[in-house]
Length: 321
Ligand SMILES: O=C(CO)[C@H](O)[C@H](O)COP(=O)(O)O
Image 1 (cartoon, helix red, strand yellow):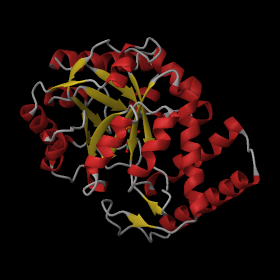
Image 2: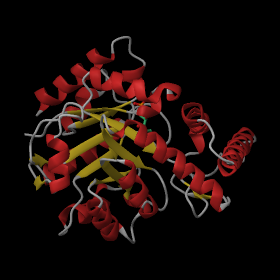
Image 3: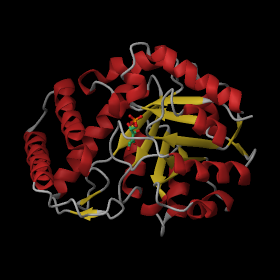
Image 4: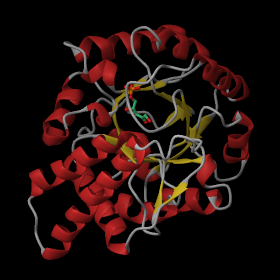
């Protein structure tokens, strides 16, 4: 039977108090912490980040509030980041980007330093909380391979990349992720047909999780797209109880007492994750379609009693399965 996992999305947390927010969620019963990684990448491409500028800016600034600046290069990085965010906000306000379909990755050129600084800041934040939680990282970037080594070093537990961004190199990607001791997952956007992930599940070196995005990736608080449940149903039908043996590193993580509220199982069904607009009013639809890992941002962080929301969602998944 699939194990219910509830993963609060840290995108909705108070970035200035990231560590205590992470602790709070674990205390409230979270199994995983969901981390959205959607910074500019080293080669200057920007992923699905354009609609969440102030989140990114807040994260960048809060990184500096937590750690302080340590050198001229980082000071320069901070300024370039802020300028970058202002530029994007300006472009958005002039509606220059309105006609850009969200599934097209927008190329914007930046300096090498800018990309590195972004990577550095996300790494640091992950290091900050990695000793306390299973960090379920969702990479909304165009070149996920670049992130495998740094996120592995930083302590990421799960590494979920987008099928749309890895058509040519997913085999290498999965291999590298596993080599680094992380759990590979594949995500698909609402408009992407479910068949695109089948090769990643059927091959010799399969991913261990599928993330069906139930909103367009980018920011929290959007409306749950009920029509995406069709894909969850198709996946659950095709893989009703696909047990995947955990890699040794994953087994160790699952058995570690430090990482939240894991069940100590070495065999588990495929993790079917959903993300976007999940909360008390939508959980039953997702759970009955077959989802067992629920990412939820605003419904958990915005609740007066997050523990109640987490428990309600867990019950819904358990009852459905
Ligand atoms: O990836 C995401 C959106 O792209 C996030 O996980 C998002 O934080 C979900 O938030 P909410 O539960 O408020 O919809």
